[in-house]
Amino acid sequence: MADVKFVKPKNINGHFVKIKCRDCGNVQVVFARPSSTVTCNICGATIAKPTGGILATSGEVVEVL
Image (cartoon, rainbow, N blue to C red; front, side, top):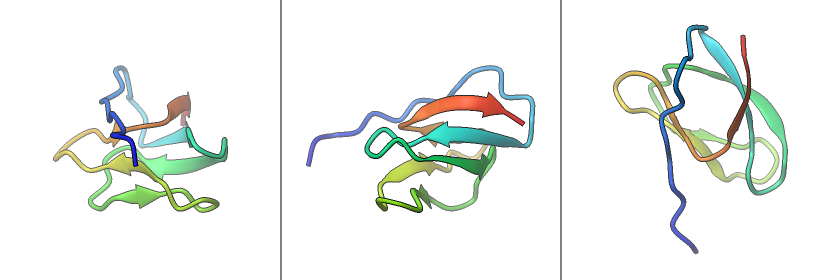
């Protein structure tokens, strides 16, 4: 399994974000400040991790809600 890079997106002012999974392309709504790891509902890949503040994501932020 290759190392997946997680980054903190900038300019997230909303409470929820739509994130696109880099493995399967599924788009799902995620809380911007999660307290646990978020996995894709389709393929089970980790798409977001908690950092003590804004999430760190391995996918693409599609929209801020």
